[in-house]
Image (cartoon, rainbow, N blue to C red; front, side):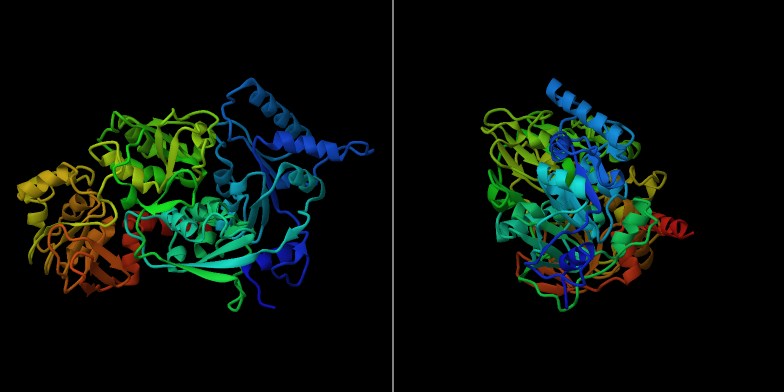
Length: 595
């Protein structure tokens, strides 16, 4: 019998040869997670044992994880008392996976579970939090339950009365633009199928876009699957899953790496064109009220929040820090940053991201859920508007029913912060051509030789096209957003081997399109992660809007399309990884892990 991934996992966990949608099963639980609401769970758990002549003991203390994250540090004596009750229970039961309010191993539950290797492919994971769907990113069947149901799991070690869900196959193909991320993909999906479109269903993610995503991005997709009503969101485990668990989570156990059967039966298939996807925003007061950002331009913003269990990982903080370095947040706008864990906090601190954010005016908070939930740390005032990378925007979210919350990708607040005012910028949806150059643009044109003494990549951007004074001034004034296009002719980057010619452009996040590139410049650019596009017939003028769709460059202004010459796979992989240093580091880590 052919099965979807959810059917395979539930059959295995229930001791069955197979399972199909509609079956009711009792799967054994591999991991049971709670946060502060463990206080209610333990009350219900003890109630189960009332009148029995046996002590109340959990079925397996090694399979229970409890993480304090929603109200930390405690905002009231009541919360502090509940924290104490849970601590006492953890100590009494010998629960090993306990993460208290600590700077060495604390964080938000949906980051802690993958970070510490608690979740594996094929696991059945239950959590007293609706966003437990997050962990389907690692190939597990992970879903939210209530406190009483969790008390039953603590007692029996299995989940009762679980209906095998029908599965919706979500196929996302294409390459996302520099302004688009996994958050835009999931917002687009929720907007398409609506908040109840996947009720009692599994969302199973496929396609080239998904395969190319990092685990961090996949966690975003599955985190918000519940906002479409899904029981679970799940990504079939693959090489990226294994890489993350081996290299980052340090898991050495054998991994269950099953995939859905090729002829598995799906209720329906939903497709999304990653090439054409524009930045999305979920408008108040529902997550499925999704619009392209171009429809809400000019909206004044009082508070920006980057972080949470959805978008508080290192790549999110790095992106914000890159854009805000040496700049200031508008005086009209508050910016709060919530790293998803203390591990991420420390890594961001060591890499200088937090310093850059703080010097720009952002306030870096402790990892936690208080702001998103509206308990403390970032409540909104009457009539205020927040732009947030969190996952819900219901009325009353962030602590005030008289405020509004717009949900977005971490890449959108960066654009807002770089705008002249604290409002959503009017031009966002499509990158534009900032300048058109002719043939044989040399490295001296790009980075004049008199500046060769400046070698550090972080210092070279100031001299980019220094002898083209107008272009240089616009670049230094940050007139052009990252992802804008510079168009050249044939033999772009000819001349000397100076690497600064690549780093100086890369400092502005610009994509270079040319009919052809000089060999050494191309190699230097790839090694530094500068995005290049070889397009022999390109036609464009300044101000044209361009979109890359697979192996085609589309000029949205003129309607013309042009073939792109693909780079060799390894060269493309190095460029997409951010350059040769990052690529080499990853290769070394894999080799060390294999020893």
